[in-house]
Image 1 (cartoon, rainbow, N blue to C red):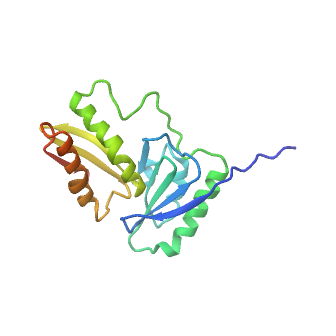
Image 2: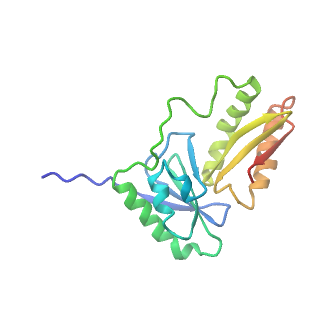
Image 3: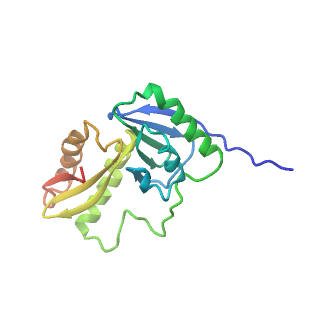
Length: 194
């Protein structure tokens, strides 16, 4: 009888600016490029059995899945040294089983909507091309939320949520870039839901 082959899974860990988050980088894609999934609690994990399993650890506060990584945010009263190897083993074992990290599929790109105004299309394009890759390096994501009266609102996800340097990233990075590239349209950038 043939046995199912285990998928070879390599995982390395990366620290990021948020001391409560750790990025677990995998040797294959977990989600389509530019698509991310943020799970602020166990109740929100209906489309991710991996995130659901990670919330079985009492120390896990948030799970974020994008491209080839999982960012886990721990509760403040727990040290990474006490749990990181357990979390890494859980992710590795889950992925070796061949199950998907996320079960949701999209018929079309959720980032772009043909009904968006020209300004919103430009804002989303700038966020996708210039901001997303840099923020993903730190294990997070900044997603367009809305644009009205010159104010761009974004959602902070993954390691960006609750990160001490997220305000600097938001104002000195994103706001600076958008107001420079779209000076007649964008006046400021704010984080929504923070």
